Image (cartoon, rainbow, N blue to C red; front, side, top):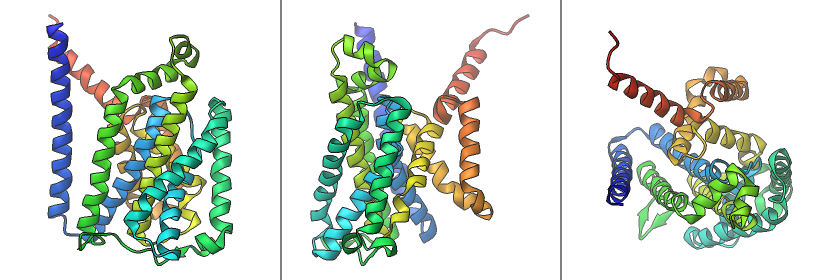
Length: 330
């Protein structure tokens, strides 16, 4: 028992140290990174990391496919955009409304949709994403229609302007760290164990007393609210939103981030979002073939590293470490 307690403490210590180092890296990156372009890129990576982490909770831990997650991202962005532009609300007052709107819609959509599984669930969420995209485009009086919604105010807090690159970077990554902490607590709690049981076998999870319908709906709503938070941050960063930012291709990109980074891994979502956010900058000469390149990378990872880059790299390291410990053969 003492050994188990010691191992648990050791794991908690390592995890706490990892969070502390990660927070330090982000703080000093914001402090010393003076180039506005790189500050913006790091901020966008943070926003996509939020999206990928939320989707990873649904796909990686609960095993539920969503091909319409960009819709919740859009609901968060359009809710705060409409309230601040049309009604003159403070952005911070609109944040709870954005989270609540996304959560309520996720509950209404998830209740019947999550009774499906596999490809059928994927098609159901894809249909929801397409409906929301049409509403964003056609509901011109509120969303601005195809031309988009302009005039969204930037964020400020206690007189501090947060619209500059460094300040906004810290706001976004502060939200990422808080989300990481919440997700880490969730996956290591009874809820997380129930989600992993559902991923392994829904029937077996039901047999041991897990309320699978309730657990799937809870993680779906949580994932949608994280996406809405990302939408809120995106809207007040670019101060202009249009339907093209929340379409089907964005949903596919989010799925690719989760799969490439590594499913059932919070840090994998960070790796996947970093790679796929930076990829267009690295391959800007081939922008016409962006989706082809994404597809090729996705296929390569699925064939050679089916658990994703994070798990794959850790497995290679573990194999190398074991081989080094083995005595050399005569």
